[in-house]
Length: 267
Ligand SMILES: NC(=O)c1ccc[n+]([C@@H]2O[C@H](COP(=O)([O-])OP(=O)(O)OC[C@H]3O[C@@H](n4cnc5c(N)ncnc54)[C@H](O)[C@@H]3O)[C@@H](O)[C@H]2O)c1
Image 1 (cartoon, rainbow, N blue to C red):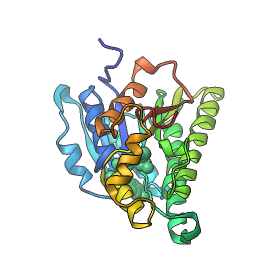
Image 2 (image 1 turned 90 degrees about the vertical axis):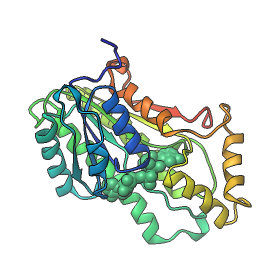
Image 3 (image 1 turned 30 degrees about the vertical axis):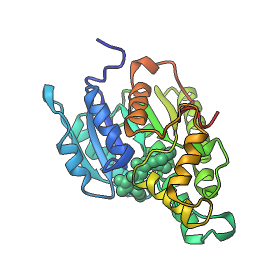
Image 4 (image 1 turned 120 degrees about the vertical axis):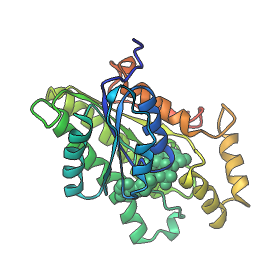
């Protein structure tokens, strides 16, 4: 069996209804895992229904607002019921609201702090509680948080978003340290995706033009590609395959890292 094989693993992916999260759900299922898709959008149920269910594995959907602690408690419990356990949690849900620092709006800042930082924190809290010895799943496992290349570089127009993703990076490392020190048996890592033209990524390019940083969305994209040694934007699969790697035994000694998946943009 390949070290990348996830047969028998049970995964929960937040923000799995579209974009990168949908791609991660598909890639984890393609690698053999049972996958529970979680999102505020109930269309995530269609993503789960389309996943391959050979070998008797069970996929499903749970409605989850990552900022709500009661939602997390229910989502973890339903995941264990649907999939038979929990070995892999991907804290992918996130939002980006573009603004120059001089124009930030309080509500937008609070929404990004809430979803990107509080949401990831609650995912870590409830994921670790479930996977540690004596928890509802109790067999250890791994957590993959989704930060961003924005956590590592200074790109204009996304100061607050970048700050939240730097926070995700720090949360990852402290959680990995606590998990190790306290014998939870849970690896905790994060990825730093580069720009991928999902709804969020394409929206960001448009917003960069709208706030006057670039002449057009195409110019914004060209500036990103120019900064990227691999010479292109990322794809959903580029990011999803890296999440599969981090979730697999191939990454068994990879712990507490932030892994760039950005074609070199952030180096
Ligand atoms: N697309 C990019 O270029 C890019 C680059 C770096 C990092 N990221 C990160 O990757 C992740 C996914 O981004 P994407 O491009 O797929 O975005 P997207 O907007 O296409 O999808 C985000 C998903 O998260 C869900 N979501 C939003 N708020 C939620 C909440 N409170 N609770 C549960 N689900 C919620 C949405 O319903 C949606 O399904 C985000 O954390 C984002 O910051 C994206």
